[in-house]
Length: 232
Image (cartoon, rainbow, N blue to C red; front, side, top):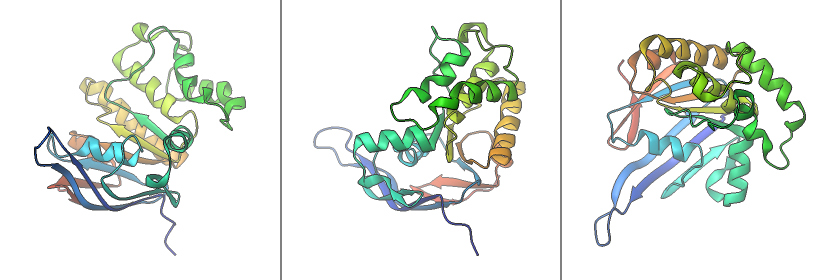
């Protein structure tokens, strides 16, 4: 018996109107996608193909023009902004190419930011979990350091822990190794794969890196607004 779906996109399209009177610009067209719990998926494709747009729709940072996005059988397209924010905080973790850490805050404080939302059920154990995760990624001695005192790889590892602090069901990574040197990028790829296996969090990464894409359990290419099996 197949495991229930964690994420399902059905007939998703996205278009933008670039200027008044201009024809709508179609980015995604009648796109379908299914992801199961604990799966790892790479989405590849040329710049401008809509990969980040797709990731934003999956993460409820944007809404599709048509179609549905379901997470844990909940239709995200039917939720208002307040309920969407709650889903993002509790069920989805985000990693971007830029770490987006707060420069005035320590590593530990940055990691704890997502736990500050009202009604977060994991607030009580947040600090203990943060320290455990930071130690797990090799930052146990950096808890009180600020981002400027860290290397690029350390800052990105901090961002990974911040994305995981609320124990999300789905982890979204947009070019997570794009700003790193080869060694740091390889170390981060190792970390993402290990965390996916250990914590069973589903991982979707948008990447231009063939080596990172090859580490995922499957890879899809976004082409002409649709997804197809990628040739790596």
